[in-house]
Length: 457
Image (cartoon, rainbow, N blue to C red):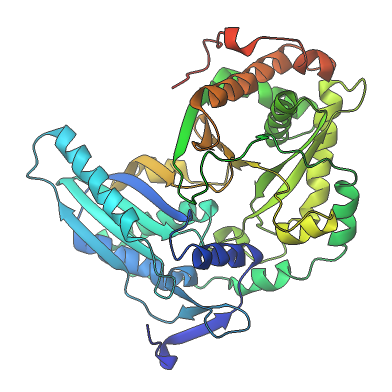
């Protein structure tokens, strides 16, 4: 696509994570795992032309939604923010379909077709699909390439859209919103000092034994993703919050540690690392919590059990280490691998854990009287890691293990989930017990009967 120079607002470099995603996109000829699809159901006084105007306002207010990428013939890739770009919107009227099952099937087909289209990063990798089921019920499908923004941004994006729609429906003006440029994050992320010293010390003498201990069943790049889902009850989550408050640690630190113990148990080791996704929302950037963009990074977390460690000892130490590494969290994993003499073709870890607890104004989105959200689904379609452990800490605690089917069987993943849940239950019952008594109890997982508070699917 030829660019009109008069329509260029800015040209900036890429963050480390954007560079990694672009490399994957180029290497796989555009067929990559970074296509994301958010499916939202809206009810209220739905007027489609107002939806278009509201989205255009959101696009006009956020440079990430007007960004295209260039790399051919350049020493380093760049992202170009356009001054103006018309949002790409497709509309389907499904109101004449009477059967609810047929409507669901049609919507799923539309979503699949959107995925099949993929994205060309030389054009804006963002588009919207609307499916009108009834006069007051609208399905809104946001299709994006992950290179332009992260999960945190979804809450910002959705609130700005609903706010704009409400204002338009009340004949109010929509002033353009000006935000701190994503450029500030790109510059800041490449100025971290003492990162090499920190990561070398943190990962000193780490044994990078992989938890899978086997190769994929085939040599092709094509593979299917499976999922095993569960829910942590509010009662259990409340108890975890109590333990966190009493010991001045975070619930996230507890959940990370429990996953580390699961991997240790599977790999017969007391020292394990896995990847964790950090938000990257550095307080040094003005109003960073309001910027739509890709701030995340994936960095190692080490869970090492020392002799005679109690659970509280381990949780406190992991929590302190998480706080300490926050100053060095924007180092690309390719650099961290160099610090521990890891071959560039060798993975430092083969599982990652994602905890999503970013701020979303649920009260506004779900309870306003004009256009409100009644359902929200974020579908990540691919993962390059054998295991991706996702936890969503919102109205309830949803837990999901995404896994590559060419490496894992569903029964193996089911055991890992049950082991994770069992350790949580045992931890709550006796947080002062020795770690070795909690994890290495000789329990036969095949005979494990899940606690009734967990809803396995």
